[in-house]
Amino acid sequence: MIGQPVEIHTKGRPPDPAGARALACRAPFASLHLDQFGDARACCQSDLVLGNVARESLLDIWHGKPAERQRAAIAEGDFSVGCSYCDWAIGNASAEFAYARNFDRCTMPEPGAGPSQLEMALSNSCNLQCTMCNGDFSSSIRTLREGRAPLPTVYGEAFFDDLAEVLPEVDEVHLLGGEPFLGHEPLRVMAMLTELAPNAEVTVTTNATVWTPRVEKLVDRLAMNLVVSVDGASASTYEAIRIGASWDTLMENLVRLRDAVEAKGRRLFFAHCLMVENWHEFPELLALAAAFEAEVFVNTVLTPTDSSLHLLSPPELSVVIATLEARDAEVVALGEPWLTTWNTQIERLREARDDASRGDVETYVTGGDNPLRPVGGDEEVSAESLAADPSSRVLVLDVDRDLRIAGVEVRSEGQGLPPLEPAALIGRSSRSLHDPSVIQLAHTTYRRSRSLVDDERLFRSGDQLLVDRRVYRDDGAGWFTLTVRQQRVLPESEIVTAVAADAGPGMPVVILDADSETRITGVGPSADAARLVGLAVELGTRLVTFDAIVDPTLAAPGLSVEVTGIDWITSRHRVRTPAGLDLSAWTRLQFDFGVFTGFRMFLTARSLPEVG
Image 1: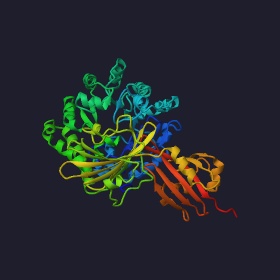
Image 2: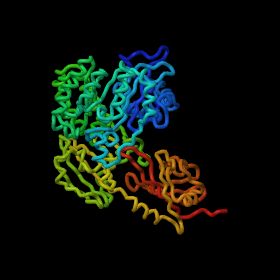
Image 3: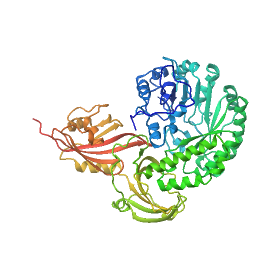
Image 4: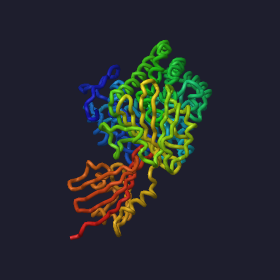
C-alpha cells in the first residue's frame, strides 16, 4: 500500500481551507511533534525527521524542505513519505483506525504561518518502569534497568527563545513523554503557557502519580485536559505493568484530577495500552473509565512484541477474541462512548487475525526494515529444520487455551546459551520465555497462514546476543504447539578470527563502521582500506560495494555478491569486483533497542588484482 493514494473518511472535522480538497492527514500541515532527542516530526508516529532543534529554529524546521516534501505527498493521499505507521494501520485494518484521525480537528494555519498545534515530549524524566517502555522514554528504566547514561539535554535557551515566538499563535499544546509533571522542560513550558498562550487548549498526559501544590496550581491556571495512563483495572495487573506505581495512589489522584478539570470545564481521559498482560481486564477498565466519565484512548502496542496483541498468532488471537466477545453484554450496559471503544478494538483484533488466517505475509521489524532478511515466498519452516543446527537449543512447547505453557520437550540443548530450567516454564506466558534481565532488541514477524507463524526476535543477555526463532502450529482443538530455536549470536572476537582465516597472504583486515544508509562513520586502518577498495575511503562516503553487501540486488554491473547468513544479525559475503578483486566481508548489524542504526564490517581480501 505504500505510495498508493488512500481515501480517508473526514466526517466531523473542520473544513479544509477554501478550494483545498480533503486531506488524508492534517498533521503535516498543522502540527509539530518534538521528542526528547530534539527531533521534530509531524507526529509521534512519523518516521521522517524534519529537523533538530539543536541545529535549526522551530520555524526553519516548519518551513523546511523535508516538511514540504511530506505535505506534498499527503496532499495526494500518499503515505510513503514518513508515514509508514498509518500506512501499516490502513493496510491491516481501515482508514478509520489510522493515527491520522487524531488530527482531524486541527486548525489549518494560514499560509506562511507556523504550526497551530504543538506536541512536546521534551524529557524522559519518569518515576516508573513500565514493562512496555524503554530507557528512551523513562529515565528510571534507562538508569536502573538498562544501565545507560542519562539522555543529554538538548532543549537550551535558544529553543525556549524560539518557542516564545511560536506559542502566541498556537491553538493546542500537548505535553507528554516521561512524566511531564516531573520534567524540568515540560514544567517550564507550562509556566510559559500561562504568560504567552493562556487561552490555548492544553492537554497533559500523566501517570497520575504526582500531585503537589505546584501541579495543583498549574492545572488550575492552565485549565488543562488531563490524559491519565491506566493500564490495568486491578491492583495486581496495574502494578505489574506500571512498575513503581501504586494502585491506591492512582485511585486517590484520579478523584483529585477529575475534580480539578471539571471545575475548569475541561475533561479527564484515560490512555490504555491494550496488550497481552491486561486484555482480560478490558471490560473492567472500560467500566472504571465510565465511573470517572472518562473517554478511553487505546494505544496499539507493537513493542515489546511479547506484549503485542496484534503480533499474536491466529490461534492465540482467536482465544482472545472469543473470550472478550463472551463479555459483550457487560460493555453494552456501559453505553457510549465506551461501547464504541470496545467494538473498535475487537474489530481491530479480528482484522489482525483474519489477515494472517488468509495467508497474508506481514513483516514487522522494530524501528525499520531488516536489510538482510527479506520476507516472502512459500518457504516451509518445520520443527525439524529448526533443530538442524547443533549449536541451537530447540524447545517444543504445548500451549493451552490461556496462552500458557503446559508442556516442554527439549529437542536440543545447544551451545554457549544462558541456562534454562524447562520445568520453570510451565504456567508461564508463551510470549515470554526469558527472565527480566534479558532485553529484547529487535524483532521480525513472518505470517503465512492460519496454522503457521514463523518469527524471529533478537535479545541481549549480559554481554551475549541471542536470537529466538519460533514456529507456531495450530492443532485445530484450541491448543497449539510452539517450537523455539534459541541461538547464540556470534561475538565479534570470533568474527575477527574467522575474517583473519579468510585473508590471503599479507592481506590486511579492515574494520568499517557505517550508518543505516551505508555511509561510512569510521574506518581503520584507512591506508589498508584504500588498498582493498581501490580508492580513498572517507567518512560519509557511500560506495556501491557496501550498498551491495547490505543488499545484493543493488550490485553494479560486473560486481557479484554471495551472501551466507551466519545468524540473525551476522552475514558473510564473498564479493568479486569488476577489477578482479576477491573480497571477504563479515557484516554485523547494529541495533539500539529496536532501531537499526547501521553495521560494522570486517573486510579482507584473498588476492589483489595485478597493477598494470
